[in-house]
Image 1: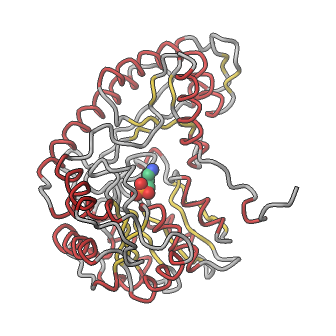
Image 2: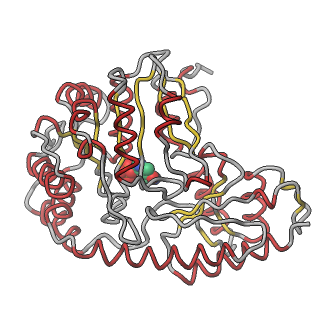
Length: 400
Ligand code: PMP
């Protein structure tokens, strides 16, 4: 057989996608799976957003779009950054792509040379590491321990930066822990970064609107304007507007970086689906009132899941202030044997046995770089969450 590219060595399907696929396959076989593995809002896309896409299709908005995004969407993104983040980006400092994921891909592919390092506060979303490796970088993890609420400390960051550091990725509120970054922490992080002009800073703000307990979101270019010419502010409509399938992400950043990323994108997907762009315009320019209601609903779910999990001996769950994940510590379960006779030596063993014996789909902490933990998404209804936690409790209770 003709061969494959070396750059794919060690790059696989993401653990959460693998778990979601396995759970779907078991569901198709008739098993009653409780799916807590997917990072996807269960709410529908708002009606006015869907209507905008239908209207665009009927109006003939069906031709190749500009590669960097239609002017109406770039203006909507510009308005969003001004309104919500107090950031001024010119239209040629904005790029639209197929999801925040493609923005991240464009940015890393357009900047990384072999030998460069990418600093990831860890645990972190798996795709940052995989995309960085695809681009030829090595990963430098900065541990953000549970005891500190999975927050990034300026001292730990300082210790991780070297002359080879090309990117630091920030993601607060974050996947997989829901950790947030208070303004004082962000200021301390910014002070470190001011000393290291060789570092690009990517802030993935996709969970910006999913914040709880009155937390105030901030983003680094707003907190420290002197860094703005090195910051790529990444966002998208997937999580806030329940638009994961529409595939619209966007960013603001320095003109030269945006031009390089646009060049990269031009050789892969070009501009994105015109109807999805019309939908995203409606999402960003339309009413934002429902965001608060949805955040309140997520907060209630978080409270439910955290209290149910903390009632399980052997499981310790922190209370995150953002996103829709919890990342409980399961060190108390390691080294035991499940009711079905499986040795639980790692968090991967834990989630696999939990799926097979209690039909609950979750994701092992190893996928995010910190073990032994597992990730649960609470972007699902409370009945499902109660049932999922009941089964997790039964599973852990059966460990001997
Ligand atoms: N960033 C983070 C932190 C995510 O969790 C996800 C989705 N899992 C994405 C980006 C991808 O977003 P999009 O759907 O816009 O590609």
